[in-house]
Amino acid sequence: MLSNALLILSDFALIAIGFALHRLWPESYHRGFWTGAEKLVYYVLFPALLFNAINRAQFSLATEATVLGVAVAAFFSAVVLGFAGRWIVRPAPDVFASCVQTAFRYNSYIGLALAYSLLGSRGVALLALVLGVCIPLANVFAVYALARHAERGLLRELASNPLILATSSGLITNLLGWKLPALLSTSLLDRLGSGGLALALLCIGAGLTFSDMKAPGRVIAYFTMVKLVLFPAIALGLAWLAGLRGLEAQLVVLFAALPTASTAYVLAARMGGQAAPVAFTITLQTLLAVLTLPLWVSLAPL
View 1 (tube, helix red, strand yellow):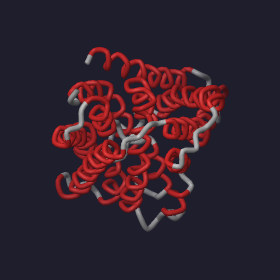
View 2 (cartoon, rainbow, N blue to C red):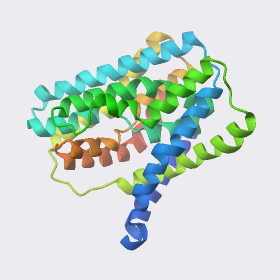
View 3 (tube, one colour):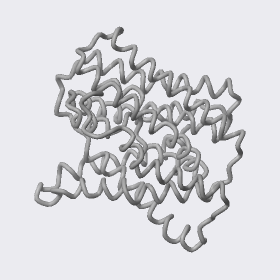
View 4 (cartoon, rainbow, N blue to C red):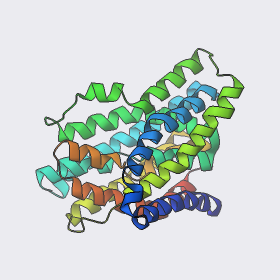
């Protein structure tokens, strides 16, 4: 547990550095910098990491099917618990529509960084497969809750998502046996991917905010409990029942224990929802995950 905790804390230290840099730099220095950095990670660096990891991976169909099945089942459980919040905590309709996504969405950047640190390229490849299935599902449910006011069609958003495109293309080329030349894979894509991990964590830190301390406490507490406690607990139980052990079990639990996605704020704001409580929930979950993530990963069966 201690070694995992230290690795996780080292990645969260980069988030803290990003938070500090964003607030210590004069605005004239970083105006537009973080936006550009986020686009670089999203459109170039992380797709390179995902494609390369999946293209090179050695997959076992039975193992991958079990991992995917457990991860997706745990995800749907979190979705059900999230939507049940409408009756359990009875938030205002606009607050519920905006915040429910924080119960089941997850920060892919933190997940990929931790998968790389804890589980290596095999962990990144497995997590990429899980993300390839769950990213569309998470977007469908998040947009459904906010629906009717979307400015773009859901199918268009999913079809143009660079993380999904990189995952699917990497899997297709892997199954067809089309491997990249070693020079291109190790010298170029490996370097792009590893650079993207650090930059993504810095960007997450820069985006943390405490600006809305008046957000509805019971709503934020409920969705945070679902995301950081119930979701990983369900994943852990399902991993035991499915017989997952070692890296595969840790990967599923890691996926479930991730804090909510920073893009939840963007979606709520763009679709006319209540973005402020979403921003606060993102910050709160990211900070609490420093404590909860090492614990959950350490509980995964070896």
